[in-house]
Image (cartoon, rainbow, N blue to C red; front, side, top):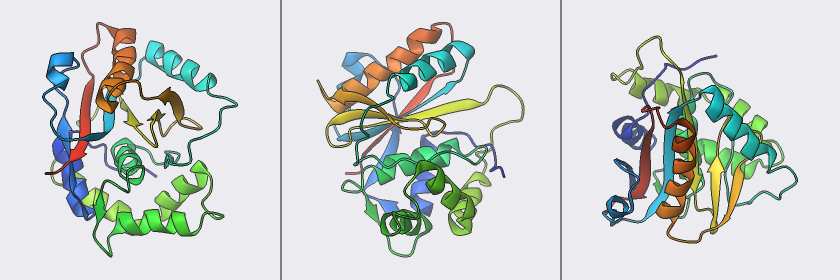
Length: 226
């Protein structure tokens, strides 16, 4: 099963938040990784979404980091699901940012995303693994229908070219955590040493430095909507 190949950008993600009944937060573009630019963020940042082409070198770098995580305990504050639907990177990234920040966002009643997250929280024994959560997403017709309705508004990625890859960074309960729906588990980067945004950008730079000639990197931040 595949979803429409949508662009992953500030406008599309904010349309999805509205469609899913999520308020008190919004996505904004991160236009640079320099310290002076990061100081322009006045609203609290609670997640960063990094999009990049998964070249061979970047895939090797990502897999090496994942291998180093084996044997570590997972942070229970992090919501993680395995991406099993083709072209669902944007949807999965949004779910990871929102569900890992439930104290930061507001949900309207009777909306598909809230129902999906609540179902997992209630039925932990039936949806305890990341794979089971991914399968539940596959079966959630209301949530997928909402996603497709936004994709139909003109955010479909043109055919051809490399597929983008997406990861999410969240400050769940202080450790900096990297979430990639294609990996078996999140990556724990340890306690925050500076502000969350500065720590998250440090991880982003690790990826950009692996492909210095590559320009197809983009990032957005989930911030408090004042």
